[in-house]
Amino acid sequence: MDVLSLNVWGAPYAKHRQARMQAIVAYIEVLKPDVVLFQEAYLAPDRTILTEGLKAILPYQHYFPSGLVGSGLLTVSAYPIVNTAFQAFSMQGKPEDITRGDYYARKGIALTRLDTPEGILDVYNCHTHAQYEPDNDNEYAVYNETNLYEAARFLDAQSGATPALLAGDLNTRPDQAGYRIITQLGSLVDARHQLTQTHTPTYRTENPYTGAADQCLDYVLVRNIGVDSVRHVMTETLSGEAEAYSDHDGVWCAVRLHGDTLNVYEADCRVVLSDLQTRVAEASVDTRDAQLARLGRGLLAAGSLLDGALVSAFIGRYSKTLARMIRWFGFIFTIGYAVWQLIQAGINLQARRAILEGLQAEIETQLASGRLFDGRELRE
Image (tube, rainbow, N blue to C red; front, side):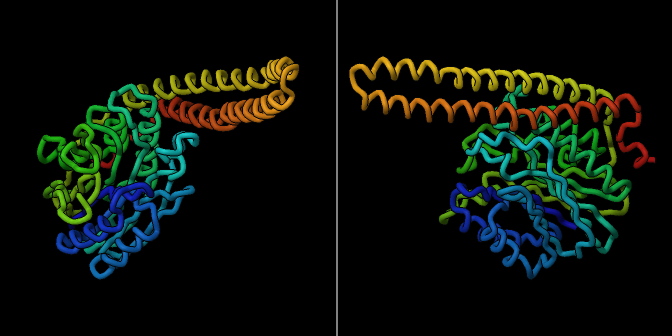
């Protein structure tokens, strides 16, 4: 059976959405895959174009709502869907970072269990927090890494020995920790790399919607499944209103449930978990420091009200109108700034700190127990 994964770039600000969605439908009608996993299908009108346009060849469809904007995860299939499940990630980004929107999408991992002619197949559609910065030590790395850690745990808990496929925009490069986390903790094989020994970029400089450095961010990962071929698709530049299908390339994979399977694991879960534990602990300390800094700024701003009153009183000797304006504008600005800082410290950063501490305790428990989910029972 053929599986396609594509980030459709359906953010509200994305260019040429309607034209691109129609072009995507036309392409898939020719390709005729058995299963398609869409990411960033955030908006209902875009999903309608996709689902209605593909209903004739992919009649079974499921969207996973989440958060204010939605998970963006839409799975369509030629085979009946017998079960679905969704887990939102704990680390969801920064609410104050409105332009990037990860917090409001509430991303996660979505399971669609399919009844195929070859048997039950668990298909996971996944989209993680973006890293935004190219280096390995950026402030968003811990968001992405903990997302992929939770994705591996979710897959392990839901599927057991059932053949499973995880695909999507994982927002991690092969040289980064997130890639090791999802492949090793999830006992998953990168199908394209296993077959070709290459990591082909899926987010490319040549794409007219990106202009960013080449990066491999989209994958098809498998467990207890045979893979016959993998290739990148939808790489063309278009000539109409839409300049390309998306800002990401699609990944197409031909898989089978019987015969030889791609179960070549390189799992050293203890090392991976220990490294993740260190990064989570460091992020927790950084969050605590940021919380204290915000609290200090908020209290300092509240204390500056007295200074404003003194300045207003001095100016009032010369102009009561100007003094009144300064007093009111100063009061409103200072109170607003102080409240914002205190909200950040007492709610947003406190919630982030609690999540990180919870994840740290969870990982410590796994390391102490020695019962690590490395998939060995699946290979025996």
